[in-house]
Amino acid sequence: MAQRFITAIVLSAGKGSRMRSSLPKSLHPVAGQPILARILLSLKRAKVDEIRVVINEESKRLIQPVAEAFKAQVFFQDEKVGTAAAVLSAQADALTGDVLIVNGDHPLISPADLEKVVKLFQEESADLCIGSCVKEYPGDYGRIIRQKEKIVAIVEKDSLTHESRKVNEINSGIYLVKAEGLVSCLSQIKDQNPKGEYCLTDMVSIFVDQGKKVITCPVTEDSAFGVNTQRELSFATKKIFTRKLNHLMNQGVIIVDPLNTYIEDGVQIGQGSVIYPGVYLKGSTSIGPFCAIETNSFIMDSLIHELVLVRSGSYLESAEVGTQSVIGPYARLRPGTKIGKQCKVGNFVEMKKTSFGSRSKASHLSYLGDSEIGEDVNIGCGTVTCNLNMDGKKYSTRVGDKVFVGSGTQIVAPVKLGDCSATGAGSVITKDVPAQALAVERAPQKNLENYFKRKTREDEKK
Image (tube, rainbow, N blue to C red; front, side, top):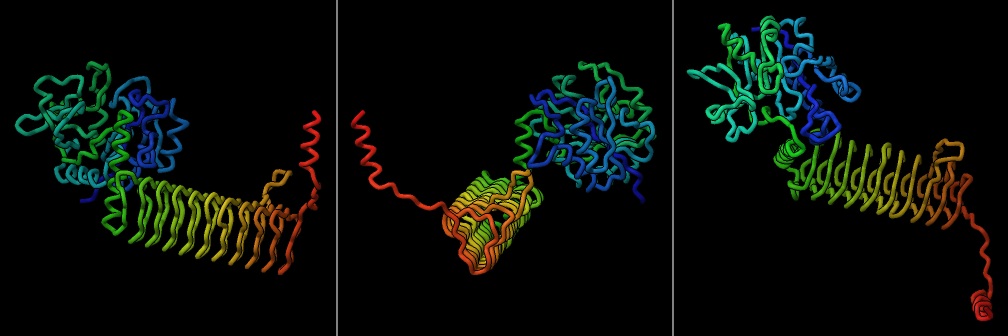
């Protein structure tokens, strides 16, 4: 049986007042990604044909770019409040096929559960399918009310009676309905409830009264989990981090303390690598086998080859580190930096948009920006490439192979240091240095004889 065209509607117009934040609720980050982005990604993976996101006008500037990144259309909810009014705002009257409706605050919703709902809905030729799950402590979730095992209504928290509170089957917020029956049903929903809202859950009783087929599909507690507070946001984040850590450990990665390690979904790590406590690995970072990432290091969108040691407190962003290199402690590699094989980048060394050749060393307290450093180079302590000119432009420094840069050297770009050349400690290099040359540029030293004896006599006279 061929699958009908499916339009997904994401309800993301709520202001999320309980979050106590000026940021729209659906944009709060969960393990590095906005809630809305996670939902849209799950819908994409569930292979829905079209996605529509309903937001409020105030959130347009912030939410619209996220929705459009997933090729979703954005619609604005009118003055009517409630989930049913939100669905109508997505121009539901123009839809055909089937309509999948989900809440915009469920970051743990899974593609597998969405596909399960679609499959059961189609197999049963249902008019409406509700995702439900049994929860030991239902809390404020809406309850699934049944008669003779068939669903007859959903009761929201504000309308719960003493008896309905005993029900532990909850509404997940996932609805799949035939488009042809959706609009006529929505037009019958009234705002006669404690909140004065047009509630989507009233569809169930309306469809049942009309003799239409309403079914439920069991989904996981994760898919039913909605975020309404900062504590719930933190819970969702921890859930995703834990899932990722368990997957990595099953693949042979050594996580010393999973309770204090934070690795996002897109990160890849090779077997035998050791990740120490306090590490945060973000974005598209890829770490090869048999690496060690020490405590409190932060690595984002970076490529780390095999057998690399990243020592404590280092910060890497959009950088690449070659095999058998050592980074840190407390090193910073900024975007565009590429470290070769068997290199050493020591404590308080910062690099930006720099190519650092194999077996080269910058052991401590240096800044290398917009530079090309050759192989087997030694960068002395306190070296600075002065890449920003007074004209506001940045210029590059080129250092050949086997160059020795003395401590405290200031290299004023644009400058080229030839192969096997050297600079004297404390020099300010403003001109190219030929291969095999020694460049020394210092003010002449002047010794004032008996300076301190004279100073003492002058002070006594006073």
